[in-house]
Image (cartoon, rainbow, N blue to C red; front, side, top):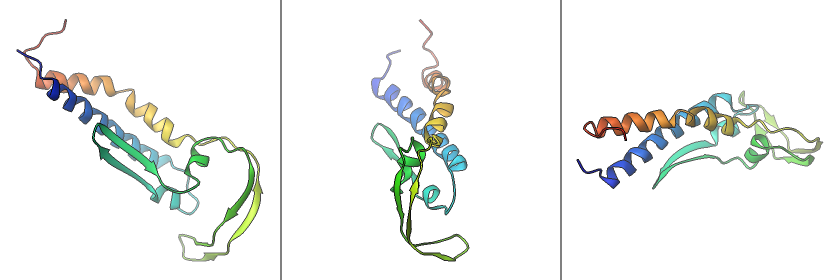
Length: 130
């Protein structure tokens, strides 16, 4: 039996997309929440060769990674209960990142090899291990 390069490529991409969706769902459940804007800004999109996970709030990278500290300006916003909070600024000390995206990716992509193996075995039943 001849191995089809495109079939193998599609199996790999589908495995990556499955694990990416699992990682995104996990990151949503552990995403820090004050107003809900960060969690609500998250989305997952299939791209040509895999998947893209994004959190679009302007402060997402500061929550994910370390923050060096400095003046923070907060625009007016509404809390989840509907009350209005006026804009303000303050000094924020340095803080460690939450790494909610990175930790989710690590946890879910550890199982990628097993998922690829299952996909390959399902599609190439007559091919033996070398």
